[in-house]
Length: 189
Image 1 (cartoon, rainbow, N blue to C red):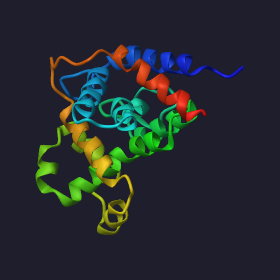
Image 2: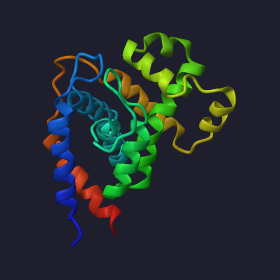
Image 3: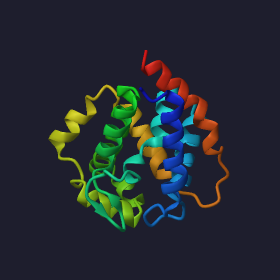
Image 4: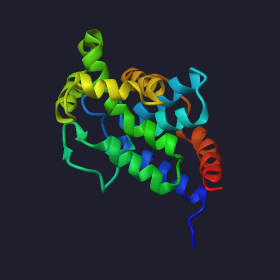
């Protein structure tokens, strides 16, 4: 019997509530706080449903047991691909999965094209950058710049960098349940 949209969302929220209590790799927030801050930034920017969902779930690959190579201080190296794969398996739209899979590429792009961006990266983010391939080459950047979701991936990356503030009051995880259920229900039609 297929698992309902509600049951899948509840499993994801439980994953975020439990595994998300761990520290967010050298930052002053938990992984759940980081996810909620990113989603709040997306909501505050008037983003559409899929971009808000991608902001909330962009780092879910760090929380999965089946994630890729894990380095304790910096998490799952290919968490972007693991997260996108998991979200597709759960029935999320291809656009949500593409946004999640592109947030590391956006960091690699920005470190090539924007020196001040690189200077603002946290030590943990610099360490992961090296394990994720370092700054893009010019050829990689040219291809990435033609991605139809290019601007949205850069916006998601911006929220990813901003969503690391200790004590910032944000909407609770439960406030995203209806959005997630509605998205999965539509994506399955």
